[in-house]
Every structure is written in structure tokens, then in C-alpha cells.
Length: 550
Image 1 (cartoon, rainbow, N blue to C red):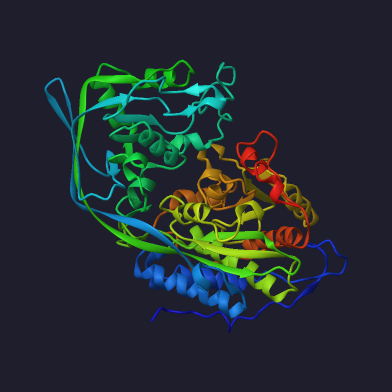
Image 2 (tube, rainbow, N blue to C red):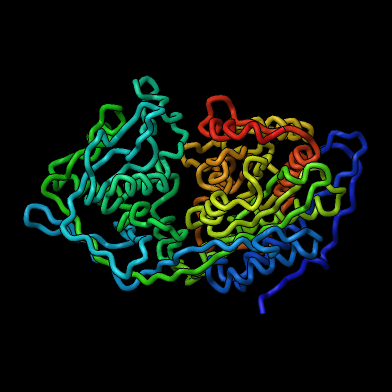
């Protein structure tokens, strides 16, 4: 029977009088309880949940526990067929034996180690991937963006080849006076800079394989972050036309290893990278160099689950304010030096689920709002936002009438910081309301101090943003805005050391969630429809459904 750890024994904070998060003078405002939040983090990140890996026993325990919390609060199940769950069909891939990775150049053979030099796998449901003496071509940043006047492929046919791509965008590390500066938001990563897009574009082009060249500055995290999680099972949504959407082999290559391949073809990495930062770049064949990949995998068609709860609105039940936080971490993967192989995911993202549950509790205890509210704990975020992508393709409430999506991903323990980082600062007018409420309690909003990481494109609000739903994403865990967040990224992010301990408290996180409650209450009780900033990449798709909103 699934483990359950009810929080009913914890005290619930008394309702306070005030208007810090609501417009009506004297309105009663429930208070987020940091003790409850801390206890939720402790429970969900415990070893009993085995790192909350999708499709594992840890998932069963986690989703059952979260659904149990929603039920105890009096929320309604809002998943498939009146259940608490939206079923997400996926394929699960596991390495089966070693990988042989060799390059041939001028009669010489170079051998690369999986994990150390190259991280490679496949999301095609086949037992073995074999690419023999496959031509290599460097395609710069691998970007096709006609609206930005950029095309790295220039009509060159890369079918049947392995493409090498730089991480991040063509703007990254470009001098401010360069004629191409600003085409991709400077050092702020766009979706074109994300590995997800690069894998997709390689598949659209018919490539046999794709390797993204890893550089720590451009990726926003060290090679070890990829290496540590690379032995965890790979997951992908079941696709009807997988050959058109997924290459045979995809992954990453260390910059020195990529430079070695280029050198064998008589090319220089630095020179090629500089040429890729110009709009007139054309793909460059690594003449005389081929790469061979041979590795096995097992695969299973399984399901994972989004946990979905609802509070039905009183006057406009067909309009929905959404709140989300992913429940998954990496399960059991590469052990660290201490032999710990459980990736507990305390900050990322048991903390977000703690915030989500507190929002659900506050709204459940308060008078019902005019608009409906949906609370979603997403599946398989760490595998590529799979639960959110599935929901975006199979929404349980109309996306056209989803007022906004408030996302909670990675809240740090400890006291509140004076600044609140908003990922995607300036993309919507939602931040205006948050800023007003933050100022009222002596805090201020700031933009992401690490825009090169592309955090806006790396969390569960993004698949819905692509469909037009305005998003609000304040975050703390991986932005580098404070010394605490820098230490977290360096020592804990996506590692077994992201674990709860007895020194933790969640006062600062509770203050952040309290502000989100205010924004949510304003949206759910009002008639406002948030908007994307004019010219934003998501504005057009939202405007196309404008007639459905009144």
C-alpha cells in the first residue's frame, strides 16, 4: 500500500486580519505556514521516496501522498475520469551495457568514454543504436529563426549525418558592438539556446545524431551536472511519428573532445565558434572524420502521472487560474563519493510542492473565488517537462480560458532575501501586481541574474506558455542571486546532496508563497486577463484566442 504521511497533526496558522494580498480593506488573509512547508519538504525528500523517479515505486508513493493531501484539504479531483491523476504515456529507456564511441580520421582511431567525454542515448524505442563511420558536420548553434533573421543551416542537407552544435544562442559572448548583437536577447538565453530545441531541430532536419558541445558558461552548469544524472533512466512522451521527432542518437560532448574531432579535420574550434556567431555562417563538414556509436538499451512503454486538484469557481467556473510545481527528481542514479545514489530533490522540487500545497490549503480554507483554480503537481519535469508538455497537448481545462499559470520551482531554505528573482522578468504584466505587493512588505523584484542559463525555458510553465498561457515564475534555487543560491548550484543542484536536514527552516519561502497567494487571489476574484508584453514570442498565439475571453 502506498506510504502516506499526513500533515494533519501540524498546527494551521490562524487567519490574520489585513490586506497585504487582497484589495478589500479588512479582508481576512490566511497565512502560509513555514513549519508545514518544512515538514512537506522533509517528507517528500525522504529516502523512503527513493528520489521520486517517474515510473518507479517512488512515484507511486509521491503521487499518492500528494493526492492524499489535496483530498484532506477538501479539494476536488480534476484528473482523468474524476480521478486525481492525468495519465501521461511515456517510454522509459535504460542503458544496456557499455557504449562504444570511436572516431576515425586519417587511418587513426580515437576512442571516447561515455560519461567522461560524451553523454549519449536515444529516445527511439529500439534495443540497439548503431551508427558506423557517420559523417560529422558542425552547424554552429543549430538555429533556424526566420523572425530573427537567422539560419544556421542555409539549406545544407544534414540527413544521415551527426551534427555538432554549440550550446546557448548566437548572441552569447558576442561583443556589444557586433552587428549581430541583440538578435537573441544578448546573454539571456532564448528557447533556441536550449538543448531541447537543438535536439528537435536536428530531428526536423533528418540528422542521424546530434551532440551539443558543452561549455560550462554557455550551459549554465558544469559537465558533472550532466554526468551525475546521465545514468538515470531516460524518459520521453510516446510519439506517433518518433522517427521524424527524434534522432537515432542524441546527447552532449565535452568541448575538448569536440575540439579534438575538429582538429583531426584540420579545423580550429575557436575559429569555428567565432564564425558561428555571425549571420552568414554556413555548416562546416569535418572532412575526413567520421564517428561511430554502438550502444544498447532496454525500453518500456509505461505511464507517469500529473496530480491535479480543483476548486470550482462561483461565478466564472469556466475560467481557471493555475498553480503548478513538479513532484519528480532523478530517483536513484550515479552514487556520489559518499556512496549515496538517492537524488532526494529537496529544494528541486519538494520545496515547490510544499508551496503548492500551502496555496491549495489557503484557498480551500478561504471563501471560494469567482474563477476556478487548478493545482497541478507535474510529472517528469527533469526528463524534459514531459508532464507539462502532455498537458499542453491534452489540457483538462481550456488553455484559452486559463487566466495564468503560476509556477513554483526550487525555493531555498532560510530567511527571506530582500530581492525576489522573477524568471522571465518583463515578459508579462503579471509581475506588476507581484511588484506592488512585494513593495508593500519591503521587498523588490529583480530580473534573473543568470539569464544565460535560460531558466524561463526550463520549467513547467513553458509548454503552456508556448500555447499562449501567461506565466509567472519567481524562483530562488538556481539563479545565483544570492550566496545561498550559488552554493546550492555548486554543491547540491541535481546531486544526492540536495537533501533536507534538521537545520532547515522555510521562513523565506513562506513569504514568497504568501505573495503568490495574493497574486492568485487577485486573479481568481477579479476579471483581469494578464497579457504578454507587446512583441513577446508568445503574444501572437494568445491573441489568436482573444475572442474566447470576455
